[in-house]
Length: 361
Image (spheres, rainbow, N blue to C red):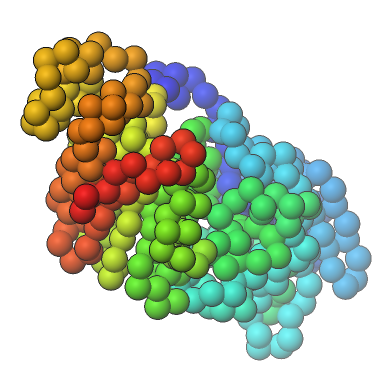
């Protein structure tokens, strides 16, 4: 997708921004005001979006507001999810306390920016909700001993479509957002999940991690090395997201696993392996075949090939270890990006999960 097209797409709001707006509206009513509808908040970068309330309830013990998340034109799993915030008084002197309601997960593994046992409400949303809670309490002259419970309708089911389970966040979704804004088709959320996966694996003492481009290669490399789920990174197309992070956060050992076309793009130096953002250079593949001693007919065929798999099959028929050579080239790129502190190997799999190439042959 071109930058021009992205500019035409509609931005949305994070779960953290929705929870902050709901907190402000609920507390305003709880402390004696009217429910502000719409309710306006200030995001970390100064934007001031307004949110319509979906439901509202106020009684002496608590106030509750729900907001329907609008992720704009991003294919976000939480688009149109109902974010529900319930506010109550907390114990005297307790300050602001966060609770995980139904559909919001709880942290069960070390390595995340939240302690084990904490509600999966990330630091920036906590800061945003704390700021609006203090603002409203001060406006009404009320104490700031406040309990904020965040829930997401159907959140546990939605979380099955995220990486939360692998990160040790159980029972539902995370309340996310560093800017409050969802950028359509942004890679940021996926890359952030990759980084948290590395952190969790390190905290768990994993000595060997595997970053895979897809489910087939992930299952294959996990079985090949008998790796636990904590050691598996759903890299997808974001090789750069893994390798650049490892430069400052090295791991004892990393296996990169993927199909031939994506590993070829990594070997060519691409950090984003998506078909819309990088492509296989067939002339480069032909040069690798020449280095392996291929005849001119095979080299010409490779230059004119329609797919990388076609080139690989023809190389295999000629008994030329093209996938091994490409894996070695990808390994060299990985070392160049991640640095020498993380030993990296590269494994190439076919569509059936068969190992067809490896950087150490």
